[in-house]
Image (cartoon, rainbow, N blue to C red; front, side, top):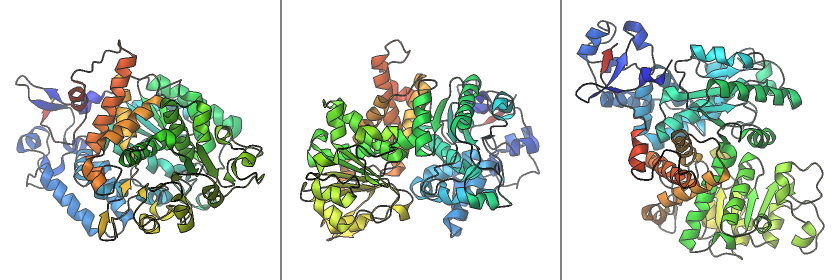
Length: 569
């Protein structure tokens, strides 16, 4: 089945329409085609809808207003989430039109932080199936499964094994909320047609005792498979995915840190894929750093970085900063020397037993760092008190970790420290922006991972920029699908970070923010895709794309949530 079922065609006069073979209740039950009360009189006659709908004919704007009114009546975020998800399952165009209009207000509802609560309650709130649920028992039947999927022309796949869901860990089958939410952001940001998006949950069991004891739990009720059994399952999944969707982009999402790095390393050259927790987080953090340094008129190579948290996000940020430093002319060794990474045991140091492979390049010799100390457990406070740290980034999930003492110690090395508490959700942030601003009397440059209210300090208002990965991955995905990328390397994300920095306006900076407003997401995705594709064209002159007219070409490929006329076929 082709995406053309949902795509617009042109008639003899050049006017757009969608050819439709369904009618009656079948048409009303297709979420990609259902217009509800906005079906015109002609369409109601032609597709046998008379009597199946209220007689008054509305338009999309009126429907959006009605949906928003219902949304505002709800008090809890989780009920607002369920309200919007139900709409998405019934009327995709209306869902995306509504969220697009109210993006800043609704993004925290359809994704972080509310999606975490939705994942926890998944089995108890389940209504309509969406996406594919792949288990070790059915992984080899993937080719058969896609024959029953609405569209065979899948362009973007987001897959999770649900072990590292946001800050709440293993959620088993409930992790499906993450791919569904991420793909909504691909549609909103990059204009990927919703029928070209495939959310996938890799249900390999769960170690979450609460889920295993829950009689309503909908996933595989056994402990997670591990080791060789897990690796074989992932290999079979990738192999079948390539056969079924050879042109699709795969985004790995919310895997445990060990599996996240291992899967990415094994398969990044097998099919076009990336891990947003690693590379998207790294790129968005680098963009914020670049913007802040432009404001300070300082160079990246003159900074020293502390990354508090060494999971997928922390590792991704560390590697992305290192790649950018190398691009600026430093050797790889020099780049790694400037980056200090701390995990649950403190600073990553040489000689620590059982040190994960991805952490090894950042391991420091404590004897040469901290006044001859041989202590192998170096805390963040000890590090900041002994090293010239100018950039501090938190991805630990440890609320309140960035204390007044730690932040004020940074003022000894820099007049304007960069402090980014990026942990999600909001209650896990390493510091509240209001506190950071107060600690430094307004000198800090800060951004967060979750949305925070504006801060008032000394008669000045500060808009807190959100370092949200949504500024990066939709544009990267759009570029990859347009350019037919065979792989997505680190330079793609360095380019994306630079593009995001270029999107920050003087107005943003004047408000105290180093990231743009979420409402400008679509334009940011165009800019990111454009810059990534320009680099691709320069490196692959025979790729079939041209710089001339590239922006217009990108825009023309982006789907918009609008009602087009239907004609029977």
